[in-house]
Length: 233
Image (cartoon, rainbow, N blue to C red; front, side, top):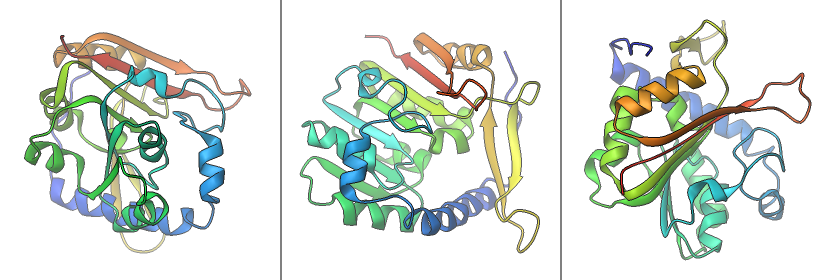
């Protein structure tokens, strides 16, 4: 199994990720489309509209938590089906946008929080915890997996999606959120192969681990890593 390297300066990286997602959200708000566009899109794990599995990977939860909910589309989708759905995000811009779009849905809740901080302070447990190209990608799994496992109900499910790892490039991946001009904005992402994610999750006590890369609609384009795992009933 790939070793998880120590990562110093966590506070600095936390602040960088917050600034990065605020900047990203400011641009994304103008591109996301109408509320009806989001409703028509449905629940999607991939970067391609109307492609791949939907909410069935969550195994019909009564309540669910999204880590890094962005504009809240998936939270709203679940809430409209009567599932008590909570979304957290560390970007004030994202949370404000999510509340403006979906705040009138009774079962939808949004909180401005970082994933590990939220999970270490809440007493609530969930049937499903999930991340759609969100906080799971940008959080050290050594910090995140133990608190996820502690807050899943017996038999609960974890599901996340993100970009597949580049062959031969595993572990913490550094990038500059401002590109190569402007103020320094270091951001980390964590990338592992399907086999490595399987071993990491098993090592943290998860069962029935399924890891796969879903091919894009055009096989020449980038696919999507989708991971599903359970805790013991």
